[in-house]
Length: 96
Image (cartoon, rainbow, N blue to C red; front, side, top):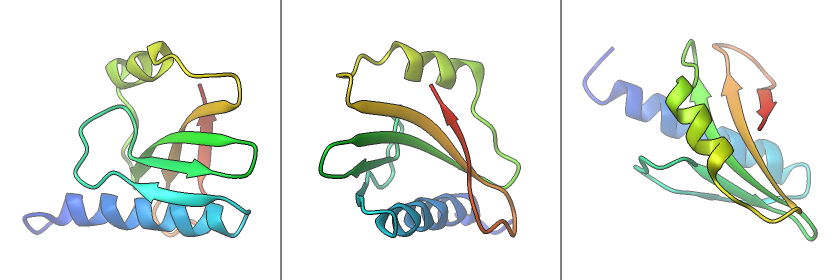
């Protein structure tokens, strides 16, 4: 992959996630270049999703999973990992 290719692929997956959830009634925000627990926040009228986005063959590490699980949130907030496999039309989701 070209230099910066992984970043571009990840950024495209984040934008795709936002479009996907906007079609479901959420408003999406991307944390460009973040190295924290979450890449995208999705907000609806009565619900919030904090999401770590993965693309292709990438999977979250045990350390990433543990950091997401330990992150304290209110009851109406869902933490999840959203993964877009290559050429997939819908994402896989893992609620933590």
